[in-house]
Image (cartoon, rainbow, N blue to C red; front, side, top):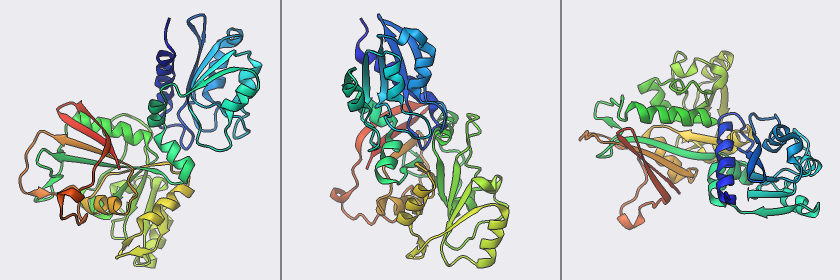
Length: 356
């Protein structure tokens, strides 16, 4: 007989299909099992559309009666953009519900509701896997701030570019495709103005044909060119600036269709803590910082980074640019230590992920 864990793994895998389409909602997958057979499957496909449980119940039809439901996140029990899932689960005659983790949204109390309605319920199956899958949703729901990942790509000797500033491309195509996949899954990409001026990047998901993220450019004096490639679709660009920005330039960017956020300045730079709060108000629940080294250092120092993704290529550059500046650490014992580290090989490159 297949164990609860195996069925939950299937539900989690299904949930992943919603990546890039459901934010700021969670990724949810659901399967319905009867007499050892999967009779219904569903996942949350798009923000505002039906939840995973409803999609699974539809595919199961009458077979849902007296069956067991597996879902990676506690079913909703309140009216939101859609009716409560708990009602539909009870109506369908589901006998038992196995849940991966609690929903951090205080309005959701599906586990207790289903128990109260007489269904057999169990929670906590593959809880850690379920939490990792929805780490952005959990942080956003609890704090109304986005989950921030800092992505770095460097050589074996820790350089992100040569001394002349050339950085194309340190990592291989497989790693770059992987990053484009994550861009598709992330709400917004954040870079500093110098990255836009020096590299003129597109910051899109072209290698995977996925949804393009919002682009956030930190530009305290509004130095970037109005012809920068990143402004190809101005409706997907937010420029965070300060009162140092010339008023006429702000007006020009506005007219182009770019969103301008004027924030207070901290040591001449955009206030990152204030920016993160503002992004949360715009329902941006996940951000990936992609450069440069000053922004990376300031973001870590300001405490806005939750996770690091460091790609290391088997190349040696020698004199070059360091990935992170301005941390001011003078003793090894004061070094920042990452938690919950995992590694994987992507093409010829190594990816190290860890949490702050």
